[in-house]
Image 1 (tube, each protein chain N blue to C red):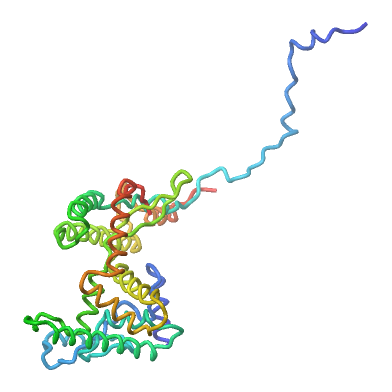
Image 2 (image 1 turned 90 degrees about the vertical axis):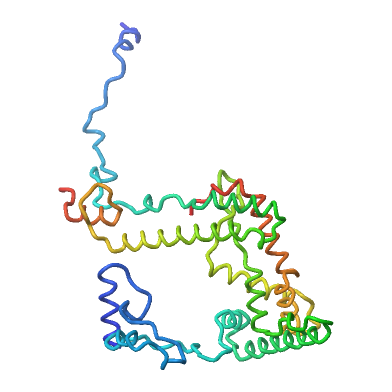
Length: 217
Length: 120
């Protein structure tokens, strides 16, 4: 610990202070299962470099996915991740059941129906990602809604937030998994409230495009 | 005999004695040895043209994204380039390497001025 502390202190003296406990020369841990296939010469460069410890949430199962993990975190309330995990897995189950039913009901092209629930979740999130955003900027006493580009990270956050908002908005007669599952299925097929919300935002950005040069910060 | 006031009026008001109003130095009468970094942040308007093209395309295709793939790609690439450049610029400022020349950022200027401060 004392070593870490002195390293962090040294980092802060030359240049700016890093928020990380580990200094910059520490390498990121590699999260891969097939380490035998990993090129040996690539590994040699890690021999004498200190490596950061792996995060608690790192996993190499086939069910692990970045978007899924994020979604799980956004569902979580009051740190009750166990409950959130149950809700998400129930959601995926409902999606799977619905898609399987659809596959059996469809007359001819059974292969075309996507029954991979995790893929549908990813499709839904990708479909509802916005391109722009409106920020309010004050100019001459008037607040203008100015369209600004957003980062990739924020677009993912917004799309997942909208999906959850839409799910929470529906009436409380059925549980969250049912509501969320239908929103996700709708969004994955390019329809529904979340997609409409995204399109509305784009339309508003388009009508406010004259203010685009107002942004400065 | 009473002296008429008009005789004095021609001379005007007598100036005040300078000793009655001593000079107060409210702010120090010399420049500071630092500059603030506010002016360096600059304007943040980027990718306006790409945005305009994107809006035009979206309006023509009734806001269906798949018909404007090229424009969207261009717009996002432009924004990414802009952010990367900003990040790099910030990194070089934070390094604070002072090189000769007249195009200095605020951190370099501050380093210079710390070395040659205003004489008191």
